[in-house]
Image (tube, rainbow, N blue to C red; front, side, top):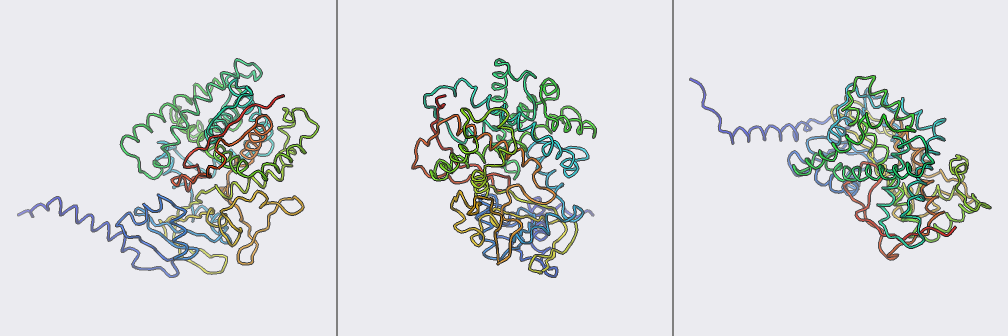
Length: 507
């Protein structure tokens, strides 16, 4: 006689009990020297809600409770967090056979962009693309970016008037940097960069790209955490499809002045058998990856300058000295000269202080096998296969009061020595730090486009300060807090925009 069927509710309860057992009790048997484990109070979710709501606050509490290394349970996953900057090299230079970034990158690409590439190998891809964003190719990119910034900032008829114009500073910074960056990397409407009509078409098309880019950007943090509602999922799908159409291979093939970076990337996709429709999806991933951080960085940098007259005066004085005896200092030749861009030491200090305060990426690796992790203090911990390892440089070194006095305060000259040269010596526990500021990541996954990004940000700010008068509409308005959902993904975005007034300077 067959056994009676188990009621559905009982079956569900049995499955639920089994899952809880697997999640909570598979750690009951401790490995020697494992980091302390904090499970959280909610079955399966663990600390997922607190981590997702405000990672910086949550991890600060965990650090106070457990020290510089600990493991937290997050939605069925165990994440080991390391917050000792002296020990970061043990992670960022470990072989990919033990600590791997690829699998997590694939998860994010699928969730955020609906992209699954065959034979995807980020390390190989980055090594191949690096040459096109650095060294001998950097001057051409910098020159192209300057031309596109001038087109959008100076040649736009709406910005030429000497009457005051009001705009959100974040909207201005993000839109200009995405549009100019897009035209620089993905191409112009025509090879004739001097035709006013064609440059107007570039302004219009790049504005359309930015509109869809901004819509996409609003959904990506929830998508990364698999927290989208059904309606939001449909909206995200619609925006992605629009961008896939705008960036189809057929349309990209019609653009002129495409960067060698894009040419090489498209050839790479074709060589590994990626079909054209999937190539367009991959291009959208690259659009966000290359343009997602420069605009927010410009927003914070300009806001800190506008809120700190002493810092603004120091930067403006430096620019006057760099471009002295020039009626219009930023001509095509001088603006793209690397020597000139590298000579702004006060600006560099302002820039890196801005990044220290606002860059908050996670450096993440998947643990591929049980392995030891030896820290700088010679203590050794055991990592488990299947766990995730995470560094969060925003907490340490960047906001560590032992390293930086009053770390939450903007100090424009924090990265300057008394003689005006760059300051690079910072200490923790009496020992000099190799990693004292990590906005670009570190090791094998350090941002390959950082030099192009730095040049682009400098040119944007130099043009803005040279050609326009800027002021805050409400000078006493507080600096906005962060949009906390952005922790882990690069430069933080503000919880709200700040309105500025600007107008073209008289010739």
